[in-house]
Amino acid sequence: MTYAASIAKSSTTAIAATPDGGESELKFLYGWLGSLSLHDRRLIGAAKQAAEWLMADASLRRLARTAPEELDAAFAARGIAIGPDAVRPLWDPDGATASDHAHPAMAGYDRWQREMAAHRAAIRRLGGTATPAFGAWRRRMVARAQGSLAPQVEREIVHAAAAFELASGCSVGCGFCALGAGRLSAVASYDGPTARLWGGMLAALDHAVGPAAATAFAYWATDPFDTPDYPAFVGAFADRFGHLPPTTTARGTDDVDLTRRLIGQLRERGGGPFRISILTTKQLRRLHAAIPLEDLPFVATAIQTRGAATYRIVAGRMIERGAALADDAPGGEGTIACITGFLVNLPERRVRLVSPCVADRRRPNGYRIHDERSFGDAADFADAVTGMIAAAMPMTLAGGAPAQLRPGLVPDAADALLLRDHHAHYRLADTPLMRALVPLLVRGGTCAGVEGVLVAGGHFPFAVKTTLQELFDHGLLADELDVRDGQPANPEIN
Image (tube, rainbow, N blue to C red):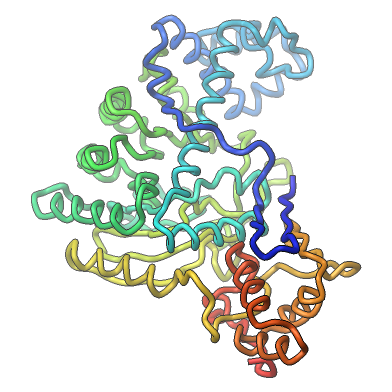
């Protein structure tokens, strides 16, 4: 799927680059699960077991293709608490009938998947309910992501307003870590001073960003289970925002008591989702043995086993080591950086303003750093956040602002009013002003310089300013970070 947008002849007409279908209304996944009977949750849990094994275990998928009559024994050997006939659509999608899909286990699992997708969409939509400057900046960064990232990658990015690292580094050390996490070197404790700092930081983010602050979460290039006080940190988050933040850990089977405690918090307070990365089939077996069937629907999984049938991004440590996917492994370029906002490291007292981009050797972790500041206390943090918003999120174009197309966006060779990026295209209005403007944006300059050239050519100053502002508002123009990164404005039209 590509994203298409158009700028109408009227400068007051908005442009939108969004996929068909829109986003789901706000729903709380765990509230729905809590409304189900024990029997229904157990059916969903059993179907999840089957789905996770089929994703994780290439030999099981091969058996389903070549010897389906042996699946009963294979399911039983893996501890799957349901027979293959009950979940036929999972392993035989082409042969499954309507009645197969209507089996209570499959119907429940399908509903669970829809609720997960709706929950993710709700987080993404909530991220758009931000204060004006932050919201406008976020929309521009989302437009860039839609143009540069493949749709199957971009739709997984919720563009959350912030991520808090409660540790420096990670103890797991995954060879494919797409965020290039370093070795674990420090962990925050929820003692009195830190608890007050944490509360002040959440309040500062809430004040600076608005309702979108509730999309934040408390991990990044870290593992939440490296922080023993993680439940206390996310509990305070829920006190502030009314729900628990998302959690992803690769250590969910290392500390089953903590996993059960988080499940209990989610059932009580909502939010999430709670996701466990599965690195080996042995780990998957431990998870299914440790968590009762009725509680498995409260735990999503990210299957990362060797030979898994899941999409893997080439980023972070894989780029650093020059590693590549196996020929039969689904995946490719992109990013897992899912915040468009503030990346905060609590032990290091550092806050960065970041946005997602395609991971490459220049930015192996898949995000751009627009600004970086340090803080000592909650007041410092508030000053840092508001200072970055003021510096990096202008609402209007200044005369010295870049007037050039963003990187990757170029006019079509046969039609200069059709701008193409890797995964999006934009139709510009067919007007004399736009036809004169596009070549100047390709050359690059400043807004004042481009305006001067166009006004000298007979175009009205107000029309020029309004058109440039509209292109800027919808993320089609380069930003100051692009210029700092070595894409200077053309000196001839400065």
